[in-house]
Length: 184
Ligand code: IMP
Ligand code: MG
Image (cartoon, rainbow, N blue to C red):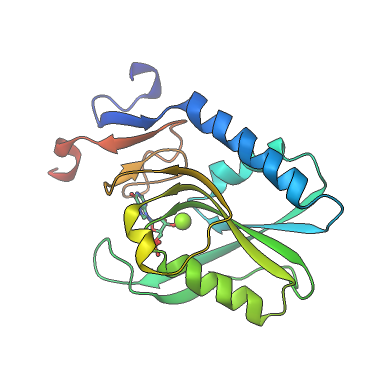
């Protein structure tokens, strides 16, 4: 852990850098196959999805374009409420486009189910979801994940784009935080 400059903040590694990259390569191959000959727009959800967008998009070999949204879900503490506010909208008109939403993690699924519906009402030809991680709670809302990296336990995780108070996003793996970080 020393090379990452996070001291003993990480309790355990859930998904290693190699595991993540191998899984993303498989997902990219499926995307290549499914969208061959179609016009594909990747929509990343800021900021958590930056790493998965960067890595997944470079493993996809068909031509794609990329756009970004920033959303904030009103909620208390760490649970989202399902009421979503757009902080940064797309630059692209999605009408008639095949859209693939690229996400870091689906927890309650509320943000994603809202976003998927929102993009469909704008007239997108299709709106599918690719996510690096999914937690068990995601099952509570209907979110159809087309491309899934890993199902993980119901724990708060950081790394690979995911943060705790804006820290740890740059770690190349996904891990859980040590107790002392929260109790600081
Ligand atoms: P949802 O609406 O509950 O699915 O919220 C998903 C968003 O909450 C993700 O896009 C993340 O930004 C954030 N999130 C959920 N779980 C975690 C976690 O374990 N660590 C860091 N961020 C998380
Ligand atoms: Mg996110």
